[in-house]
View: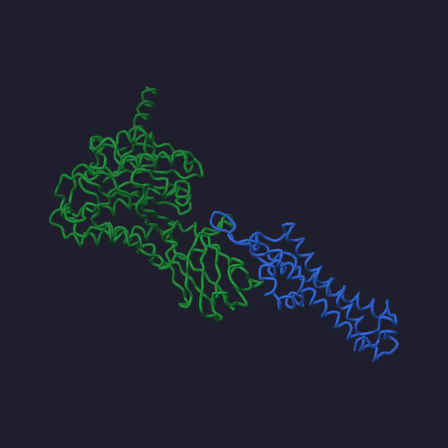
Length: 410
Length: 167
């Protein structure tokens, strides 16, 4: 009788789990069977592949850039020593776990497995997806989401209102998370062969065979995301390679910078040599010039963004700015801001690195989402700018600049 | 006051260059601050002392009627200038070759760490020597004036044979 009672209790525990609630097939990711997690300071990396119906086309053929990109990226994560715990999931309306075997995961990247894994494959509520990921990345976890990020308002819906509501939802979710966490988001845009059914904004299917954009979204603690980006740079992506990047980190960050000696006719102030110059004079070109070494690595921004002078706001318009790589081996500095001016006057020059939505977002955004055969529509994503702008607005609620550099000139 | 020598030397920094001046002010490339020893003070004090020794030797140790002409004084002035020149050059060029000057002051480098131009050359050390020579001459003249004027105000302190040389 005693043994029967014990067996009965063990059976109940197996059915209900430790918290007494019934187990369901698709539980929260961290509690799932097959999830390998070690008590380590390295973050767990959770990779989610969206398996809604609109994704089938990327996995339709044996070899596509989609499969190559995802496989090499996941393999690089596995060998890059950024995590001891790489966990794989399918995601749509629900989170569906997979064994942590990357090669098996990739081998099964096909429409049949997508369908087999199930979940709510009909439509993707991206705002809810972001909310789910924010919940999933709470405890030392970095989330990677692979998706086409096509919004699905559905037939008979006011598409514009739907997109705006989605944008507001994304913004609110992100803003709420940013109150307590130092988050970073990186969105890589790639493209791949697509052979399958495309669903327009009214969920009307069209068979297409062409190249379509898809996205790899990385979200988590800023330092951990930075480490991941450093270990697996954009240049290491295979397949089509990363075509565009969008990065957001919190604003008004402090970066290390110092005036570079020997870059003009001036003296370094002996009390504040890193940010103050004295006895400024014109060089042989008749200009005041000086350079400032800066370490932008914490901002996770790509080189093109950092080297574009349009992304900087100078308090004194007399100065021209030209950005180059920092000299090698100098205190980890990444860039040199080279200033020149025809005027010499005592001033306190403020240089702000502005936040901004890159131009490619508007270029790749499909505002209509109705006819995939319309000119240029094949290479665009319906509503992607609403997603990006939702994130952007959340991050820029308080500050609209990443960092500020101040230089005194006497 | 601790910056006095540096301020005086830097009246001529266009001759020997800003980067050598930064090194002599004590700029440390690793710390990115002026945390090293102020070399201006060391060289300046030694130059001041040398000028004083030569002036003192001329008026009180050599102190011979054969050397009380203006040209004798001028020869001593030349000796002082040359001593100052070689002191300034020798000190800085030794530091230059010993690698005491920070890389950030010595070279402009590109992103690959390759040197694109040298910011301090041996010629800058020569020019600093020239400046130091000029400074030592200045000190020599000042000490000469002081001894001449002092000797007239307090005759027992005056040089016996050279008290009117050269003024």
